Amino acid sequence: MNKVFALVDCNSFYVSCERVFNPALKNKPVVVLSNNDGCAISRSQEAKDVGIAMGAPIFQCEELVNRHDVRVFSANFVLYGDMSDRVMSALASFTPNLEIYSIDEAFLSLEGFENYGYLSYGRKIRSAVKERTGIPVSVGIAPTKTLSKVANHIAKDNPGMGGVFCLIDEKDIDRWLEKTPVKEIWGIGAEKALFLNRNGIFNALQLKKAPDEWIKKHLTVVTLRTLRELRGIPSLSFDEPQPNKKAIVTSRTFGYEVSGLGEMQEAVSAYVSKAAQKLRSQNSVAGYVQVFIETNPFKGSYYRNSASIDITPPTAYTPQLVETAKGLLSKIYKEGCRYKSCGVMLTNFSDENLLAQDLFKPVYTGSLNQRLMKVLDEYNRRADSGQLFFAAQGLGKPWFMKQSHKSKRFTTRWDELLEIKI
Ligand SMILES: [Mg+2]
Image 1 (cartoon, rainbow, N blue to C red):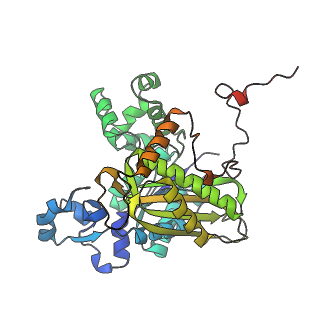
Image 2: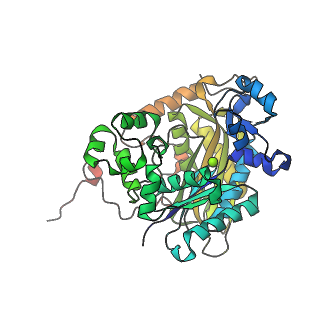
Image 3: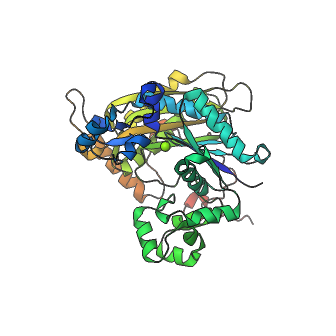
């Protein structure tokens, strides 16, 4: 069966959350600011139109704000996190396989849904989210995640499409790829785009047709996977590092259904540790943690819930994040349920080097905790895969993804050497 993915992305998510509770903001220019009211991190279309740039320090936009009566909000992550969870809950009812990618984005596997008609199914998803949460979303549907991102952009850029676009037909795909600059392709950063441009590759169709050998020689294996994705062959996993995201989500579907609190705590601890490591690798600290858990929607009674909390001052210290996440889990864990997945989201980031001092609490930057984390990360970077970890993650990890068909690491592990019986 052919794979099909829908990428659902909330439009100007933080602004849309504010609008749900304040309808007077409709059709008005609105921006939401980062921590300590620094920069614009979410803008309504109207705010974009009057010229407020993404990431612009708001004090530099004073004149624009006054002239156009732009409404300005401080970020409210407890609200956005909860709205995000409501959106994800609505999406979960449309697929057996939902992969939350960010605070406002998720991939839905639509494999086996062709009889519903992808376009009309996408429209159904869109109107259900709007009805249940008030949040407008765009839906892009395609045979790979990278193409579903392209389809999503097209849906956003062409209001006449009603927020849903389906990119399934090969000829259609090529026609749209030709109109898409390479720099807009998921995973092609500004630097790679510049290199490609210098070598005569300007649009995504040209990239799709570039010879594998040339890409392998001059770019990375990740770019080669992007190429395959453009050709309609699913080649990306969710572990691909996406630099400097506005939220880090780590979640997995378990290898089997888990019900014990102990195992759930281990899973949550492992995911938050992994997220914390990513957080530190982009030199950020997080001011908000969310934990979510879910039972199988197609087996027995469905239960999904999330809990979240602000962390002040923000941190990247794994033990503190683990304790926080375990506390959140205990609020939503229901005994007797059989959970099929859980996840952790970190957001409300600040630069660890620009962390303001706190009058009452110790700050992460410059602390012994920060030095400890640096030592840990440095060690794990050199060791081939995280040999130093926190006991809270558990030792056996029986809940971990199904890997029962994985071969041994014959060549890198003494205890997994090939055995020959004579
Ligand atoms: Mg969005």
